[in-house]
Length: 225
Image (cartoon, rainbow, N blue to C red; front, side, top):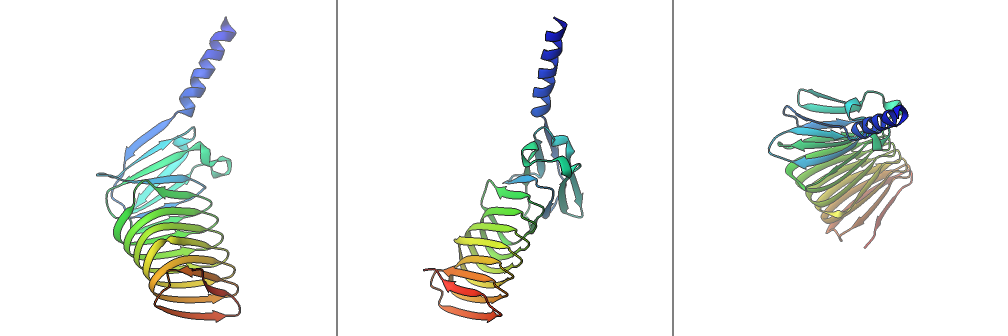
């Protein structure tokens, strides 16, 4: 009987631990920086807050310093992306999303604002639907940016194996620099300024009215229509 009671107690404890949930309000912020392989979902809301679920929810560290919200793990060396899921509810425009170390950021809603800057590195991924006038993107060291929707003007820098997937983003003007084995895919209607060097690649669709291109020590600029 004692063994049965102990087993039941352990089972209840395990279920409780695996279903851990943390919710708290956040101060105002306009920049998000993510580390340690965290999986982040953004959601537009009337107030800024965060919800964390998973067996290691209590190990997620949040720091909001001067409007920069930084998320990381207390013990990253033992963390798996399945151990904690984070939803960030934001009320104000997000000016910068900076994703590092294999982390992943997506959004439940189309991000609709005037300007946004996206940065990925170290194998991290950003996957967003946008409706913006100005978009600045930078992908390095194996990072991937996947964007869809609309952007009037976009500036893209990809290097050292970075990947920019934006065929589903309708843009009017695009300025792109790709180098060191990086790849950018864009759709442009009016003007494309593309520069490649050291094996960088730019593929484009949309039959832009004007294309300005420059290649330095190898690289590819090619229409995919």
